[in-house]
Length: 174
Ligand code: S3P
Image 1 (cartoon, protein in one colour):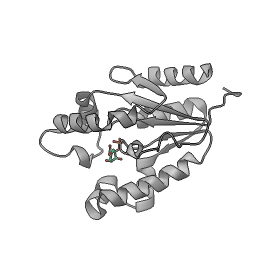
Image 2 (cartoon, protein in one colour; image 1 turned 90 degrees about the vertical axis):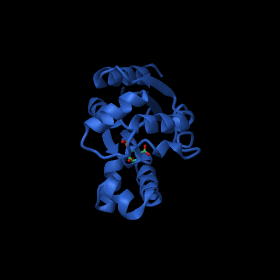
Image 3 (cartoon, helix red, strand yellow; image 1 turned 30 degrees about the vertical axis):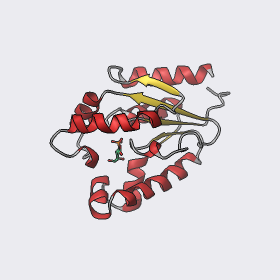
């Protein structure tokens, strides 16, 4: 990997697609820095994402998320796991600096909800009586934006290790 032209990896995809888990492992494997944008926002705001949504509203969260993303994307040898909404802003993936590998971890709404509910993290956008239907609607709205990523991986059945292997293999080929 020493002579690779890649300088950062940005993982995109829906809530529960495994961005944070895969990102953390990938960074460890590459010996790069890992940045989880939700965690960066929480550190900046001094509160959890769900509290921020509740206390200040989604626009305030999106602004902090944009700021944290800009700082992270200016770095090199960094793996970035943004929240599922970060990549929806037009141009966000296309305007990343040269050397950025964007990867879409694709999951079905059912998998996304099962995994999102399986963690202790609260996803305000999936709150409500029927999270799978809500996830299907959101995913349909978002798929086009996620598909701007360069590498698309099926993350529904794949283990984090195999996804890391696929990403590293791709980085070594190009
Ligand atoms: C969001 C995804 C969440 C978090 C926030 C909004 C979204 O992150 O940023 O709840 O709009 O998809 P994860 O994708 O890490 O769950």
